[in-house]
Length: 308
Image 1 (spheres, rainbow, N blue to C red):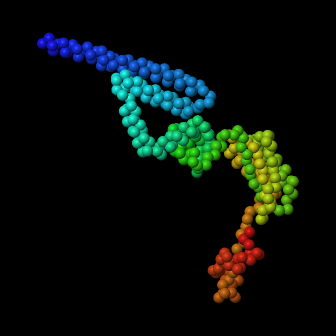
Image 2 (cartoon, rainbow, N blue to C red):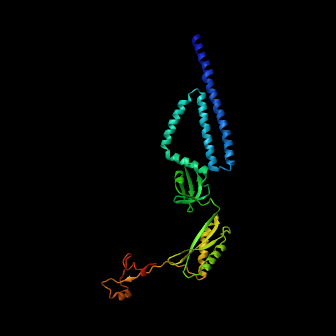
Image 3 (cartoon, rainbow, N blue to C red):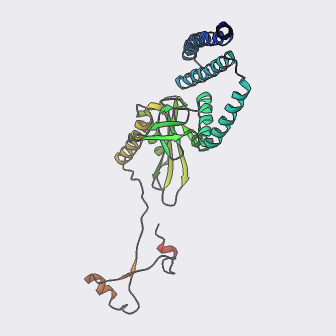
């Protein structure tokens, strides 16, 4: 009986000195680790949100990365405190990470592109951008995708991998934008007078900025009209109002000055067929059927019958 008690006492003493101490030490490390993680998170969050170089998306990403690294370090410390070898755990974790990476290579590609977008900042929240065939206001920049809102109130989610691999235009990156409106006028008009009219229209528009100054030029000689171009600069916020306003004021002013904007016209000549060539005129007067010369025929290709 004394031997059994001595054995139990020895086992209890060994448990307290070795396993029990390891458990108590591990619990203490766990509690202390959680406190340290909370303190570091608070410090990193405050520094990231106060930084002028990081926006909200970048600050959130930095906080997430720091949190994940701290928790991984805590797990390694706890496993080591219990007396287990970390080499096998790290090897198993590496194998699992490799399998996950191969299975989610597209998602990880979007994640990597999201990190690039967050830190290179080709656009930010609230910018008006065009990505591929979509254009709208940037609503949210996430790690895997970006959300934009079109002017038709349509919400579009674009994977970050597609954003960096496609053509992108950021209309909000510069404070001023140029507006170009081409205006056709009839041949025979005074070029200097037309340019002065266009400049007056540009200057009278309330959205036009003075520097750079508006300009009007004779752009080219068209087939049926002279093509002038009026160019103004305006702020990004007033772009659409300035564009539509310039189109309207140019048309109204030219109409008031008696200058009609020429349009292309097509002349169609109706010819009789060979069978009823004689009564063709009478038939046309009476509303009978007549054939139209098809495009590409010898008659239609003659210069005097050019549809222009």
